[in-house]
Image 1 (cartoon, rainbow, N blue to C red):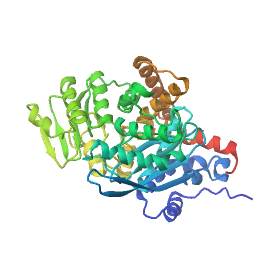
Image 2: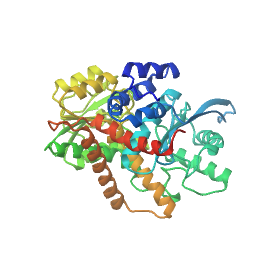
Image 3: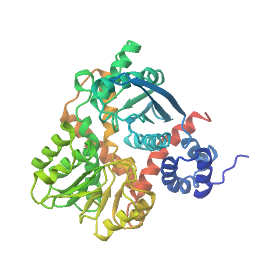
Image 4: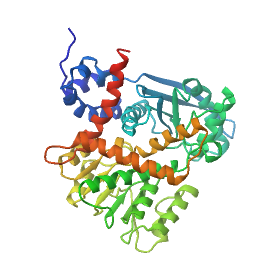
Length: 451
């Protein structure tokens, strides 16, 4: 007779760590989900008997390969590339490519695992995957980046396809890199097909893709506030980061009447008590997206603004906090500081930006806490819509896409609310996101049998 005993969390994670030694980011991501899913599957014998969670926490495959490239001086470099294909129960693998010195197999496995639940929540037919390399494009010439991308795709192309695995951009992989990658795929295969998303509009890209993650975070926040009989207009917001997610989240916050107080980069953060208005934000966008400057320059440009080197913005008094930079940027001390300052809502724009201790502290409080797998799903949602446009050989206008994104984020919020609401009306959005994302994938896996 099959074993239907549900393991406790510590036992489950002990086994996971044994199978994945040294992969702490992956263990953290799985542990955060398992904490909610293990009690949930205790009431569903089919999920437990089929070992659905154990199977989800073991990627379908992890492809690792060598990437050789030549710099402008003729020196040969050897990097490592990966593609983690976590689960394709509900559709082709879908998830970004990240080029950064911080990329490891553990980081990509955590991202692919999270992507599986995130993609499930969108309601679109997409499985979860992630990939990348420890190559850092910063400081490289266009030709060096081109040679690296061509070498990377020369191996990756055999593992992807429009009905198999559809990568996108991520940290270090923007429109330049996507162009080189797509060009090499087309050269090798002789096919023009929707195998990558995040493409330029000239060759099949989607409008609103650049803005989608940041906009989606604010749309999800707006739904959370509405459910709590609050509104965004007049609220103060602290935002970390100054990449696409942070900048477009800030833009949408401003559009909705909120006052944005901070932005940051890896060197520190800038605090503007007068607020970063639309005109100032436009200056920042040119600084970061065109000139690739540092956020410290903001304090030199605008009177009253202060730059805090080597610090994060979580001690600034605010109503709303949006961590939009990178994983584990917001630790337990930062969480305590936000709560001491009576923060109303914390909504994750980056992937897993709160440490496990910080997330636990938020969940035990009475604030609104929006987890990344729900709140930042807008980016992959519009990537999914790009796949649809490519299949239909169509290009939709911004207004239509924005309406679709707004509706998708409202539907994600409702799924999280429905599965996360307690008898007293309080909503644990983390629990709701984990259960709603798990259920759809788990039911598909049950239908397929043991495989």
